[in-house]
Structures are given as C-alpha cells and as structure tokens.
Amino acid sequence: MQYPVARQGAWKIALLVVLLALAVAFPGCVPAKQSGRLKVAVSIVPLADFVRQVGDGLVEVETLIPPGASAHTYEPTARQLAFLTKAGLFVTNGLQLETWASSVVDKVGKRELLKVVASDAIPRSRLIKAGQYGGEKDLTGPYDPHVWLDPPLAAYEVDAIAAGLSKADPAHAATYMKNAAAYQQKLKALDSETESRTATFKKKDFVALHPAWAYYARRYGLTQAGAIEELPGQEPSGEKINKLIDDIRRRKINVVFAEPQINPKAAQVVAAEAGARLLFLDALGNPDKPDVSTYIKMIQHDTAVMEEALR
Ligand SMILES: [Zn+2]
Image 1 (cartoon, protein in one colour):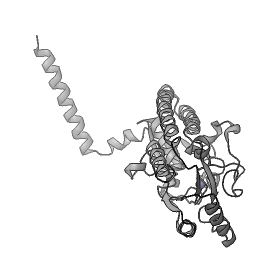
Image 2 (tube, helix red, strand yellow; image 1 turned 135 degrees about the vertical axis):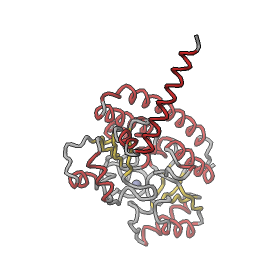
Image 3 (cartoon, rainbow, N blue to C red; image 1 turned 90 degrees about the vertical axis):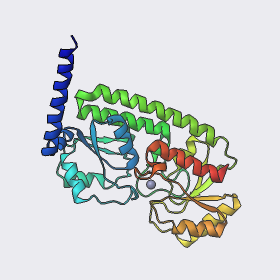
Image 4 (cartoon, helix red, strand yellow; image 1 turned 60 degrees about the vertical axis):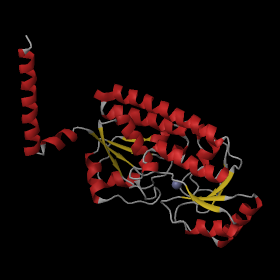
C-alpha cells in the first residue's frame, strides 16, 4: 500500500512547484511575507546585533548609525526616516549617547512609537560617572554611555530588548524570552573567556583616543588612564596633549588605542611623541568585517588587540 503515500508526496511536490512558480512570477508575494516581520529601528551596531539574536528571523532590523560612523554625531537619512515611520520599535542605548534620537522621533511624527532605552535595564549603581575614569567630564551627560562594552552589562540591555520585542509583538514573546536567555549564556561564556585572557596581562594601563573603554577596563581590571578627545572630533588643546604625553611617559604606558570610526590623527601624534604604540580597538563592530561582524566577535577581537600590547 505504498502507492497512496507516493501519490501524496508527488502532490506536495507539484504544489511546491506551483508556489515557487508563483513566487517567481509575482516577486511581490515574497516581500509581503517579509514585511510581516516586526520592523525594529536601532541606533548602533552592537544593539542591532542584540535585536537580531533575540528576534532571530522574526524581526527586520535597520541600524540607523551605519557601520563606520560615530554614534555621537549623526543625522538619519531620508530612507531611514521612512523606515522609522513603519517601525514597531525603536531601540537606543540611552545615557545621552544618541542626543539626536528624540528629535528624529519628532521628525517622523510618531510620538506613539514604542521605544526601548536599553541601558534603562542596568542598575544605576553599575554606571560609571562620565570622566570618572580617563579624561575630564564628558560634555553629553552625567554617565559614561559606553555600557555595552562590559558583557554582563550588555546582558541587561538584552533583557530590555527582549521585553521591548515582547511588548511590540506579544504573539512571539515566549520565543523572544527563550532566545534572550540562550544569548545571555553566550555572553556569560564571553565574559569568562575575556576574564581569563585579561588576567594574564602584565600591563594594565592604556590611553584611548576617545574614552569608550571605562566599563571594559573596570570589568577586567585594566585602567583607561586618559583620553585624547572627550567626544570624537573634539580637538584637544596643545596643553592637554602635552600633559597626556607626560602621563604616558611617567606611567610607562606603552599603547594608545584609536578606533576605526574616528580620525586617528591626534592619537598618532600623541603615540609618536610619547613613544607608545598605536593600535585600533572597535567599540561598535561592523557586520561587513568578519573579525568584528558580531558583538561577541568584536569583544574577542578587542581583547586580542589589547593582549598584543598589554601582555
Ligand atoms: Zn563614544
């Protein structure tokens, strides 16, 4: 009695062929299904990765600040504004990293747009005051906004994202929660791995072009001893540069870290004058670059770069 089963199989294949032919003939059918996914606008690349990890196939993510650009200075494009008008959720880091965000929401006239400020999930006691480590007081806000560079704090941001996705799309809430928990396990492994790797560093101090590394440094027992530019592109004074060069020599600091998103000129000058190395850390990542294509890969890459100078 194999015949009916075979017949049924053949019928299914025939149906598939018809459906595929329809999809080819009417390509509009395919995007229609895709547009059923929850549209999520996200400010920065690492948070976009968190949204993809938690949303796994259920979300369509648009990163507003493109890879390679700085988070502090940014203007959305017309296409991004159009995406925002259709978005069901808008995810930002907060702590005044995205000072442009509220005016953008005003611009698209969607006051009811559901928003997630990912850093809101982090206990205030875990935040670092701006300028507390490395450099003077940051001009943008009372706290250092670069929280995602500490993996356990990133895990809180993943909680906030899972809650936001569940609110925007309650039908898939259980999946979002399950995915978030699985990803947080990976962050835990990343944290342990980074902890054992950094524990072997003989040197602990470094200077950064822009002070993004205070959370990472605190977590792994390192010291961001100074920063050249408080905000990217904010030219330091000659007096400040001279003081930094003195500090680097006096503390025997051997490395200055620049970032691919920021003009390294000032860092090159300081490193050359002080006799320190200039290496590049990535605080945001870039989906198009294999070594920093995800948040986890980016932290591993940054740790390897630090290791090169500090071990
Ligand atoms: Zn920054």
